[in-house]
Length: 79
Image 1 (cartoon, rainbow, N blue to C red):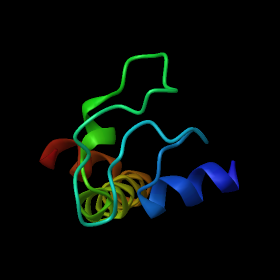
Image 2: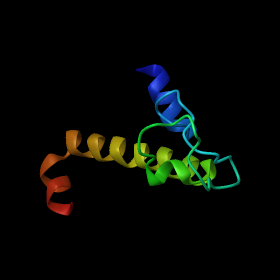
Image 3: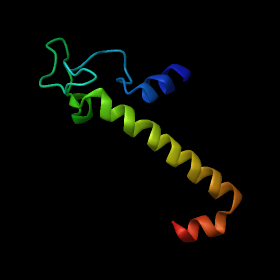
Image 4: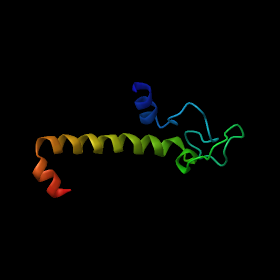
């Protein structure tokens, strides 16, 4: 579970198979030949936008959970 969280925050694929030719600064243009399944659109994105989006998503979810635990009525009303 810790390795999965680390992969998520680092912007890497959650499974250990590299599916596209995307790099940190360059988006992917094709699926690699050894991949047999369908490649999601997010895997073709460069890793830099994934690095920005994933920690922000984690922060929003944890902050929402924190506020919901402390002030549930006000948080639910504002959401």
